[in-house]
Length: 347
Image 1 (tube, rainbow, N blue to C red):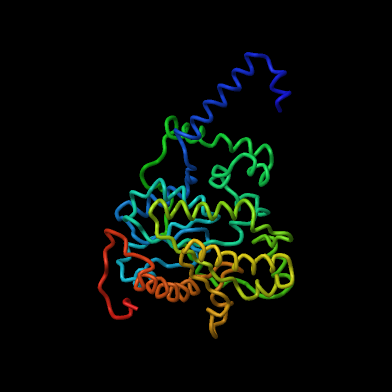
Image 2: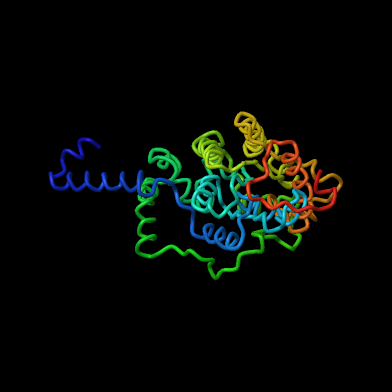
């Protein structure tokens, strides 16, 4: 690299240095933090247009399709308007952090954030769209980007700050809800019962749709970024609670004895250890959460619940979240409206 620079004409070298200096200023001062994708930004804007929510359900589609805000609100003793689901498909912790930083003024002070974390959002080999997006690439350095994606993509995403400036000053960012419909309170559910079973045909379909990786890496770049993002969310004022959502038992059975099975088990352990080290509450639900219920009636696919399953699961998560409030591990956000209801809400 040094030799190549020495061969450049003086004018070209000066131009390169000037571009580099401008890039450093833009990246480090004018736009110091990643900006969330437009679809996520628009969802947050729509859900906070009239209220300042004090409890946020965040993360990827496993939260978006799994937790019903009105059910959670009832158990925690808050009005429905105080709880919104800002989760969005393929959103990792970096996307959640970017949205929270920009729109923190639209939330109550020190809101509770229940954020779903999945193996797919921390796996370095899950490096294709939609499992890796601009927010995470913007958040990490060039060297780490080159380890995750192609050289072309790594270099191109080095100029995301400049692209953001163009959007802000030339194109203009929307500051009002978009015309696209946003589900009420942000929950996006599947009303149908999915087709989940243990046949070889199902497993092959699962392999192509949820990417059953032969050699997952869950202790590398994206895992370190998860820890950094959680710490940044806490420092920014959010009361973080991690959700370790359940998988369909057939999925766990299908990957048993494979590298994906070992990585899934290791992920659950690592996530618990991380939360204990950071003193972050974690709500985790293994196969035993189902009790005697038939999982095929509650799941849409291997990783997502249908509406019936979401209702059942939310009835479990709500009391568990409320218990954290009652025990003092979580504080009621400043400005949160408390709804007085029957004794069940005070559990």
